[in-house]
Length: 433
Image 1: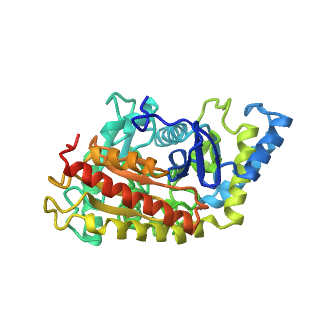
Image 2: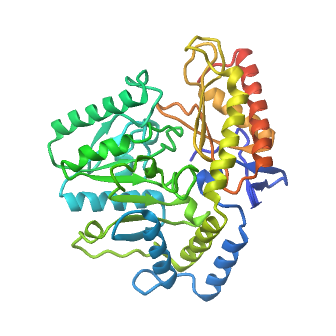
Image 3: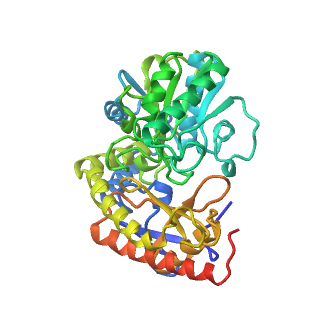
């Protein structure tokens, strides 16, 4: 199990956008337990809902009626945008994607899956097998035949030099060619609207709508993996798929992380005909448990009542602007070696990626990412990292959606100083490893 930091950090408690370590030091949390603390640490409404539900009953399983589960399912179905929607609750995003793949392959009677290059969908045997990010896929053995498609990364790869329209056209042509080889038996395309572990990369808006038009001709399903992008985090949309809605909603979407605000919850939303296609018994011992459903209901109600999506758009826009301004002297110009440590600042809402390179070579630099991570911690800000091609060289910044303007300004100032620290260390002869 990997731990962040040379001296691993023990987090003991949190409040709002801050957490404290075992030594009593306070940090601005800009990673939220890997995009999971969506609203705030120790949110009173969630704490109260969990406490009250725990005093009644903690667990019963899906073999019994569960009012909190039914009520939350109805609310999520209505929010999903999927017609005649049904919801199945799980305990994690991995399990949610597993369930979606089970539904797709059973519905289509096929084990062929389309996935995006650089993608990440979980750590189970099935989801590891379709993950397109090699550093998170320890085995190629899988019950599924996976075909990987271009398009999830806008600024790298053979189409990066094209404008958005030509980029989309090239990716659609690639998809069409692949479908010509695979035949009509493909079950589904699974795609993250914004790739999370891959470094917060995304295609041009509308790419998955263009894909959808091709998929429809073959009856192939579209699964939108919203484990990291859902619930308004991108600011512009409540779901990531809505940036690609010209061809309508996906057939299925998966969710987890933020909805539970730290409680273990995931799920699948699908059209009824897909959800009801399984011809064997199915239950869930822990999925949809009364206590996690109570927490999620309270958290979702707070999110909607306080319009945290709009806050993510407003404060996230400010944070992006500040980080781009801080990085601009360090941005590489024209790919020329020696021009800076920052290759790109990207993202939308409160989902921001900063891609780092070795200033001398222009190559992705995991060392630079580690140096910034450590320096940011010293400055009192916790962030994450990720990226593709087995090189975790992208800073991942995803604070709770209630982040204030002053907290965004303070965090950006710490990150700017951390970038300077990393540059100075690399200039002294640190190598990209």
